[in-house]
Image (cartoon, rainbow, N blue to C red; front, top):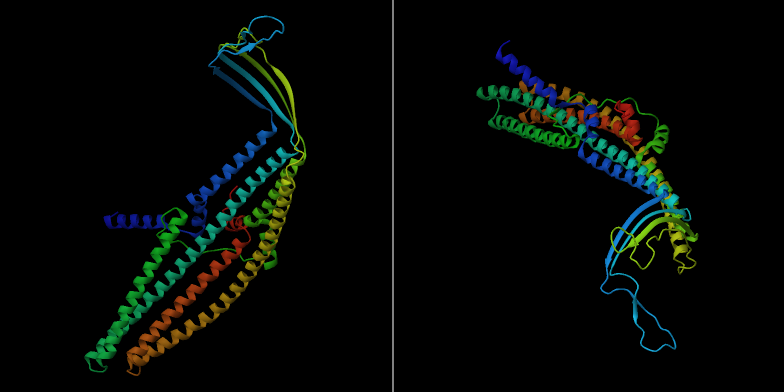
Length: 439
């Protein structure tokens, strides 16, 4: 195997590694830092939900305190009828240490703990659904970029074909000019057209590079070129897609979860209407040394079992207003959910309408390409026979390139629009359709 062949194989391997299909790009987005950040917020919400469940269990606390008093605790005794002044009697020492092991349990909190646990669980669920919606938006951005690159590459191919046709016309024009059959203006007109096409090619390549850079950032890998196009099965009927969206869309389900969070918030606010009962038991000792063996004045063992009952009977109407505020918030969330469902339905209807319009425009673009191809062939023949000007030939070449680019762009837009419609049904449905569903 010679050196040139080895180099060719290596270059081909590099190209294959840098080429990314639509499916592989969408799959890699799930590993990008942008989505990982949202996932970590979901993990944080899950940990908060587990932490909230701890409030439903007994609490065990250990406490050790030490104090050094300035003066010795004393007591002054007064004996009526006895002569002489009363003298202070020492009742403790300046050093005081207390140790306690306490077990406490909230026996009844007016359902506040259960409401708080439910709210934390629902917040964790909403965080999970927000991950799905963030993924859907990233997939949609990647789809638009992928389609934009496809359209730019098609435009670039049309411009390259236009350059070839223009150079061929320039070669013919130079021969005619040498024989004095066309004026200098026609020759310079075609030469100017060559530079125009080259400038358009440079601009298209720059635009493609920018789009590839954006797609590389979004996918988290370097994308040098595309491998294949966006391939998806036929889209379902609008009614069926709406039902899928109502069941699966992460943003819709997040709003539904938020509604349940507000219901838990109402229960939490209503818990202020009930008394709170707690029980506790503690092993407690005190002394003038860390040994906690007493101070010679009072008993060292101060262990106890206790019950705590508290009930707020009046708070200036604040509790009632908190409940009313929570209820209004829930009504607001219900209205927002209804409005969002209608917005999603409208978005789906508009997406189907736009797809129909794009397909209609594609039929027109195909006919325009055929017409421009025939017109270019006719104009080229007339130019070769000195029956058409160089300006007319240049315009026919440009019109053909524009027609081809527009046709390719519409084909790409249709593929992007179909992918968008699938994404409107929910990211989980889209992943199943694309065959990248995570288990």
